[in-house]
Image 1 (spheres, rainbow, N blue to C red):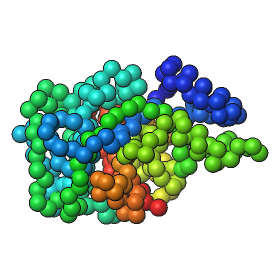
Image 2: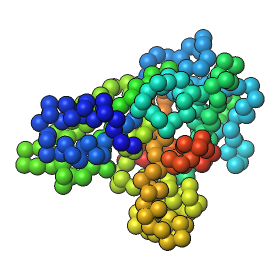
Image 3: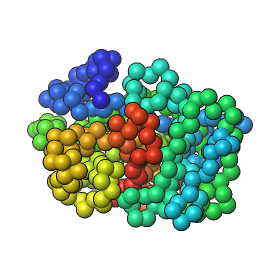
Image 4: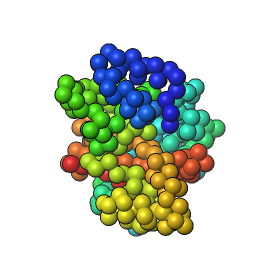
Amino acid sequence: MNLNEGNRKKLEKLISEHQCDHISEYLLENTRQGIRYSKSEVENYEAAGHSRIGGDPDLPSHTEWPATTDGIPMTFVAQLNLNDLAGQADTPLLPKSGMLYFFVGVDEPAYNIEHHVIHVQANELASVKRRMAPETTALEEQFNGYRIEARTSLEPPNYAYADYDVIESDTFDYDDYEDLTFAISEHQNEDIATMFGYPTDQHGDCEHEAALMILTGQDYDYHPEQALRQITDHFAGNRDKAEEEIQDTLMLLEIESDNDVGFCWWDAGVLHFFIRKEDLLAGRFDRTYCSLYSS
């Protein structure tokens, strides 16, 4: 998603202030427009419909609690009130209103995790009510609920996606770049979730894994070129289309481990949800992929 004019000027100003003109073109081309969510306060459930991480969801009465293929209730992890983003020019791909809910099953193995993403329309939000989690859900624990606040952000390539040959010079190393990325994204200690940024990862191939499973149903063997060939085969040999699909596989949501909420994704890792751009525009939240990364 190309930077809008306001974000482009903001980024150019930061690049100048940090005296890193040698990567100006690189950052302007590769920085993504994202959304960050930070914890604001412990949820008291006095009012329904806030964006929330952990705790219990506010659901319409007719919405069934999602279950795994074994019939175990999934664990609720987040609800995002899209009305919080109304009027934001940086978020053209999301539905204009309503609520997104995220549920997961057992988070082992770390790939192709059973999950469920639900979009509830805006006209149903007035009737949503707190729904207590079943006594035992897939992750077998209750998490503390926190209200979260959204802000649009700029997300430069992180350590897994950065091109070190371009970034580093005799006078500018990765530590300098990392300081710059914190300034660009306006990182806050209370940040707990991100949409549309770069996934926290080690190898920078999360989109290959997600696109391969969504499009073909095949597991990823951690060889990006092989995944690209499989997706190319899916498109009858059209490699350009396969590359486009990987590029248009978006990080719908990344949730960090957090002691306050009680999230600990393996060894303090992150939980990922991915969606194809085409499916996001069509509101096809039944076509998503969930995985986690932990060092």
